Amino acid sequence: AGCIIVGFAIKAGVVPLHTWVPEVYTNAPSAISGLFSGVVSKSMLLVLPGIVLVLDISPRQAGILLIILSFGNMIVGAIKMLTQYNLKSFLAYAAISHTGYLIFILGVSYFAQQQTALVAVLFAFLTTAFTMCAGYLSLGIYGHYYRIFEKENLYHVSHLSPFISVCFAITLAGLAGIPMLAGFVGKWLIYSTAISVGGPLVLIGFILFLTTSVIALIGYLTMIIRQYYPPRVIRTAQPVKDQEFPLPVWLQVPIGVLTFLIVLMGIIPAPMLNIIESIVNRMPSL
Image (tube, rainbow, N blue to C red):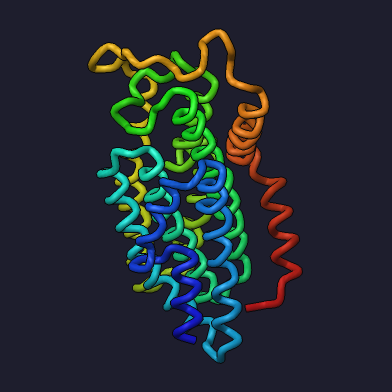
């Protein structure tokens, strides 16, 4: 059981086994980083509890283990993201922080043995997948077309690519949990589920969840403002591609679709929640 937990914890980027995450997400192609941070690594979290339970560990014990593991991710991800200068490294630590949120609510669902709490887990998983993929695809365009890799170069980038800057701003706002976006609904489900369960351990995790969310909010808002704030010095670097040729549509469409889903699931979350509830109802009880 211990070896399996360590193996899956490495794949999921659980602190302190997360050291590979910033290096890989920063240096991999943006499309790969988006899928890794939003889908592949997070899916390991959904597999881990099922395997642990087969090894004769009770759901309550599995829940306690997951809740404790979530503390490190929430703290390290939120604090370290504020110190990053590279844009992809910033999102990498944001992904670590959101991994902590998912581990926490997953642990709460097993700790309380509430199958309905899995709805919050799956919805938060989807919102993380959409936002991380949209974020890394946007940074891929910033890097490839405009050679923007650092936060200091992000000032007033909106005049170079208005559409991508809007999509990236919405993505960051979704990660921050701004109302009317999918990230807010996901965090609200985590909040309401943790409050309904209660208990000392869950309360500690809930306080960390709120505290780290506020810390991360500072970083997200700073990034959004930089896109529209005039640069401290006159930008002399020109886009790598000729300004006469707009960004290819095939690059903008997936980012636009993901951004649209982030907004749609924030304004009208009921259809997706109904689908998730129907899936959870067909799952075996905890």
